[in-house]
Image 1: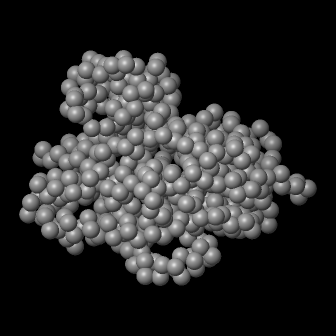
Image 2: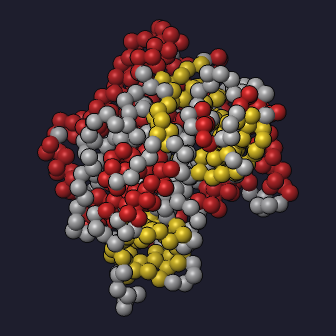
Image 3: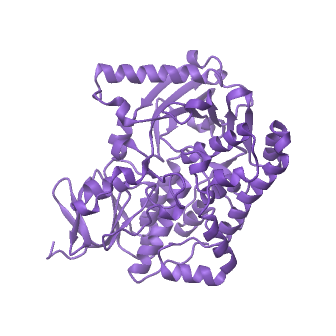
Length: 507
């Protein structure tokens, strides 16, 4: 590598949403960027695929960040990023974020209209009416702070000085709130154990941890923004998001090389200088961005045992077992909401398979299914270790998938009576599928902080290796499409500043 001239300013490993966002913003700023993707399609778990006339969301199904409400700051990032790139993703609003079906007959809809949601929750817990109001006002206060602060890297001194000087009181207040969890805040206002369980599932539905382990700042983004920007579904499916980022990236001269599996990040003198691909070819750059998980980056792509990330440092987020169904429309009752979370018993809701997630996006976008039909996406958490000893394609593997698919269909009967006899297309994916297609250790969706840890202890974009940066759900703020979009914006901001050409603030 000593004689290698840097053909690119930046190499991005992985075309997930975080990597694509960083790549596109850097390319638009005038840097020469190449994105390397091991599969044949962009987007990672935020992508779509088609089977027999049905379009399915591969993973992500709830989308923030598309609103046009004129507010500045870290929110509405999809709108701001797409505007910067000169591309559009038409979307349709979803007026109920999630319909919760919980033990004891508790049935709550998280409406876009805040008063309607709080009214429904208060009706279920009238004795906690004041506490409910105070708790959600606290989440609202976090949102108010975040929506006033411009997006940028927490590791860029220029950005921090600018934000601190322009918003000293809000910056100080936010710093204090990073020390608190959603669960701790909730317990200051309410005491009913069933209501606290509801707050747990509100957190678990998107953070995969209960309220006690979920940072208050993260909760303030999701559980308040749903009543402001709301959630919107991208027409054409989740794959419309990476397709738009690829389009914007290409408009400014960016390139993606598909089928390019990175085998090693190359370093010289403690600095990242390029990558080696599986075919043996090497590429050089002034900076490298990894969209791989923290374990894949430091334990596999880098050849330095001193940088290994021990398993005990974080909680490994689970993988998923996913079921994709094309069904006759008759099995979806009139008035069914798009997104559902079903918990049959609190004692096991955090165990693999304990909580059933379901979405029916064709209720918002009929083009996803043939006329008179719907797509149903059902999924539960799972672990690769539960599939240990089962070879992909083996009879045992197929049998396990069939058993789990049948179990999920049976559970869906509670939401959609008769669905078992209405299935026309059935596709399933195990943790081993995620591990293979997403090139992620154990098919995991990245590291989770241990309960009680400050959210700022989440890995940031900077790494111990000079000129090597990280992006995606392994980095702050964490899991979810809007979160990894933020990490992409933050990473692009930091890299651009380091390379001497800072990004312009998103508008």
